[in-house]
Image 1 (cartoon, one colour):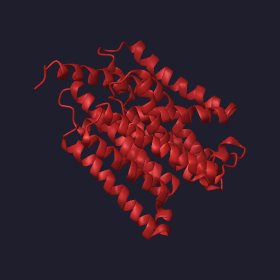
Image 2 (cartoon, one colour):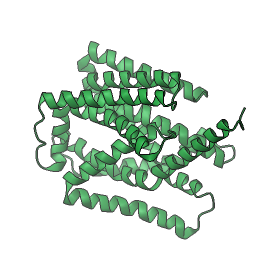
Image 3 (cartoon, one colour):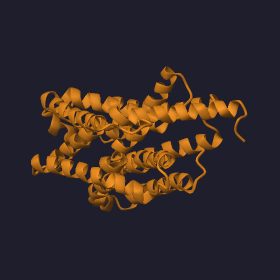
Length: 325
């Protein structure tokens, strides 16, 4: 369990933020609706985008050695190449590109949340999917009308109708799946009672947030305060082991140029595809986020989480053999 100030403040801060937004949505729904979009964009710009802006620095230090100029060039060539190829995929077949991205995102969110599980691959992946389906499936299904309106603009055809029976059935399945996964992790000794309690609070607060707030705001709060903020803390801890006297200012200095470039790129895409309909801009903002997220996940994040899991396994073995106090 993380006992640092950051590790203690993060969960309480996000639970409090979630509860405040839930209360505001019940008390002043029009006010929350009016400010939902700027709040969502602000959170994603402030935390969501920057957590992927360390990719080159992480990649460099994961190698464990100095990179040759050709290796640096090859990294950026692959990064930009994946974005270009995926952009062409969106242009040629937006439906299959969307399905691929959603499936990859489900796995990515689950892996980042449970990166330290000491389980064989099949069971570990099951836990990843249980969390990913909850945090992605619940908001998209609960706000299915808004989801369909946004995606219709980039798919160029309407999404199929989904009956309330199917929606509520899937919502229940995804929610119970995340709770069952927490119980399974507790029974297997992967988490302690504190971890179980925190996990239940996460599920309850996020469920309330997804059901009470507009689609983009609820997901942006999860993406920024749960996913991105934890990733930033993990990245800073990793880089502090690799770089002497590494500070928060150093982290900001590393992330700022790439974060600004990503935000400008998304902004230009949305501006180019602009329309009188808000859903069009939101749809293409989603595509822009997908384009920069794909190489982040495939080239860096999966490898970083593999490193974290190996570190957790080594720590667990040391504890089992009594090599740690």
